[in-house]
Length: 373
Image (cartoon, rainbow, N blue to C red; front, side):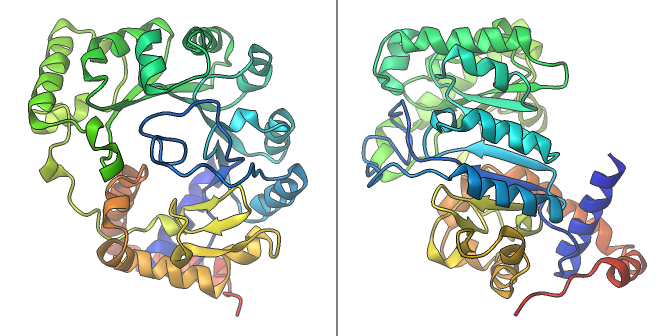
């Protein structure tokens, strides 16, 4: 724990002084681009999304080298997600075990549609985030569009089994994407989270783009959703499950963010705390895959070398100045899943600015790394 806090302090100091004193805290890793669902709102496999040209995945040997570099960079956490379902990777079990042997805490983002035999591996994972936006088989078939109607039962069974067999330190969450087709299921998803022993329920409004506009929560639908949540709050059912809405309600009197809450996120400092690896081996500075934030490829250079490169630092500084948010990615940045972390980081930077100069000089002498040319 002390070592983790020490490295976090170095990252924060780096963000404050625009220097590099440590590697990232977390690696977000896309294992593959295949999926067993075709969710309506998915940017990769949804209604208007282009199907991947071919199945692509990171090879186990490549990931082994990446994990070695993670040790060098003092990375403490890896999150396995995908442009699809990560448990479909043929070497999923060995990849998870390898990451654990390297001392990495593992998070898995999954739709829950995996064979029961994988529970032997998944129950040891530090955090499992289920993505489910339906509470019954009919809505599941309409929204997530599985191959079989019975797939919903498999997802629920996996959630229940994991709730029974997971280790005490493991955490589970349920991510519910709220939109026009499922807002009426809010009471049901609160009850579901409690029944399957989910640690946290996270409800997020669908980030609307032109291709998903039929899913948009119109103002009248938002009012109906608010009424359902208020009823659950008054009954006490919402309070029985840890969630991401109660704090917002206590602060604003509303459970769901209004349009005015969706302002531009401002400067991004996550470039000192997180890095991203795609299924093609591309290292990027954020979840966007556009060329402007692409740093390089792990098939050509190691993760450690790319993290310390001049190219990465230039992108890092541009994000910290707000360049990308203002000029290019405002809609994407508004829907970023790291918004809360970045907001907290901005607050910490303000605190450090008031009394960390001397501390920074001491850290600089001992830990400053020279950027590669």
